[in-house]
Image 1 (cartoon, rainbow, N blue to C red):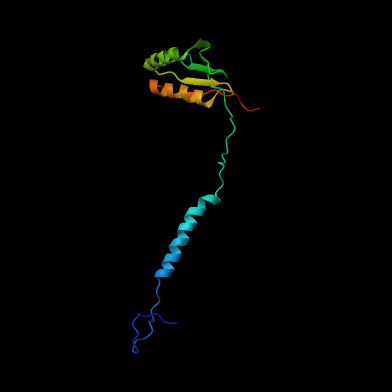
Image 2 (cartoon, rainbow, N blue to C red):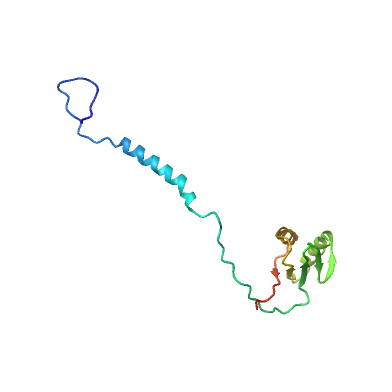
Length: 139
């Protein structure tokens, strides 16, 4: 079967060139389908390989601040119970001292993650540059 123009000429010859426009159209449609369906093949769960907490004892310097957070979210500044306003005030005072003390956070396992983020954000806003977590060594 030959492709040509619509004029009915007796002298018209068959067109010997290949029309690749339909081929390109089909390939673009397939490409779009693959782009749309490719994310469906990846698993929806995020797999994270969490490392084990193997810690060594760090000597407690006198200017380090140990902030304990119980399961209710209450704060204890070096074993003294404080509220959020007092925490912010003490943080701003601690940041001004030279050298700046380290803030060591010791949180209960049942402490909400949001509460930890609030504490860390408050420390960052106050200008605290050294922050660490106190953990129990693995047995």
